[in-house]
Length: 104
Image 1 (spheres, rainbow, N blue to C red):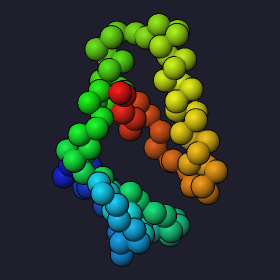
Image 2 (image 1 turned 180 degrees about the vertical axis):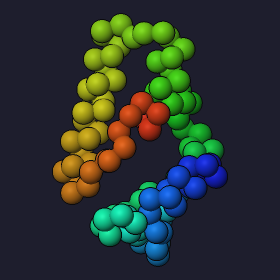
Image 3 (image 1 turned 90 degrees about the vertical axis):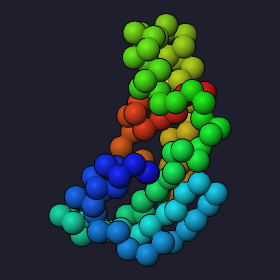
Image 4 (image 1 turned 60 degrees about the vertical axis):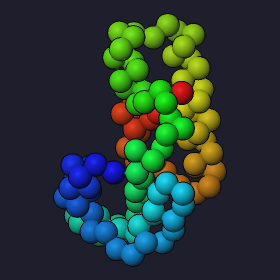
């Protein structure tokens, strides 16, 4: 996680204990500063994610200027499938945007 990303999180959330770890990430319990809502925040080291050679989807779209309908449909299906899986596990992604997604 870049320092700027970490600083942005700290503007809105109070980070608490680590509740899970993996090969490339930690999951921390956090509290939203305004609402007091408890959330889990996954903190990933993007540099360690060498298996995402395509980079961010946003950068890919910008480099192409626009996507064909067929290519956009492929990305859309992958995104919807991923969101369906996350939701089936009882989680929600609250910051879904092309910058948050990786292309392959």
